[in-house]
Length: 250
Image: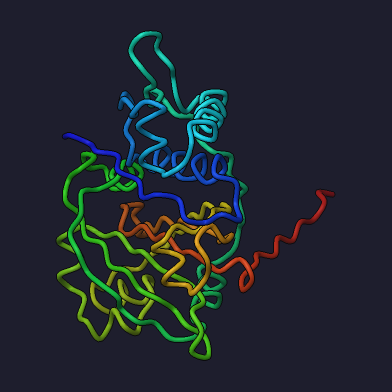
């Protein structure tokens, strides 16, 4: 499958250009949008695509090379590393009821439903091939009329057919599966990281591009351990936080 990397010119002048480039490329590599072995455009081409000089591009590429995400090959160019290093995650424990209590605030609104090629992370979770068609529905959750979180839900094609538009406008993933499929999601795993908002996230959350957001990637499994849904939820950095409580072993 041919992959074309066509970024939009950078418009935010308050955040260093090299940092914006690093953030964008890192996310696309780690999520599989820029697959292993892909050759990137050269420095001059990237500079033109981002609408900047070669200096921030060179600095960004050097930082990603140092992190093991890119591999320069003399005389050939710069390639995405074969095995990008996995990010470090902190594990937060709790109950399904804890999760539901955190995700029932405000009102949901369905933005769109579409069929897309599965990114690597999504494909790996569902046990399908990268690029295989999968369903994505995007939703926004608002509290008192103000955007609180931007939700991207990935499910298999056979699954989304059971959801009505009404239910997608009202129910979170756990309750969707319980009501529409009779499936109890018994295991939830979350990965949390800080990101900067791209143009899509910024528009949905009414914030500036490159503003800080919290991304919570959630993996839902049934009581039998089968993968059922994957969600990416983006929270405004000024409206959401996690509290982690630790106790010492006796």
